[in-house]
Length: 104
Image (tube, rainbow, N blue to C red; front, side, top):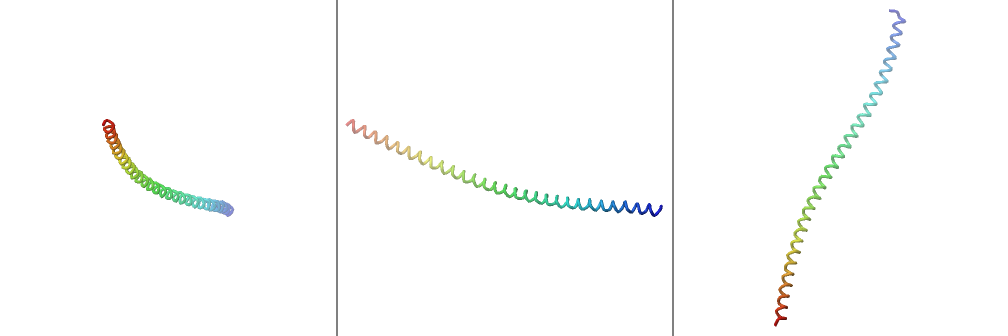
């Protein structure tokens, strides 16, 4: 092999090294961008998980409050029903008493 052939091979190898270095730099940039995207994605996922947990807790609290209110309403309705029955009985007794007095 001649020195000219060796020089030509060296020139080709140097170009290949330059090209590979450039590709490596581009890949490192892409890798950094991908890492940043993954980190952002993981952050969003964490935020969504936190929001979901908070929403579940709020839903549990609302269900508890709803249940408590339903029981209270039911109790009040029963109380109103009993008072209504009592008033109707009082009215019936007074009506009977008045009818007796009218008959006399």
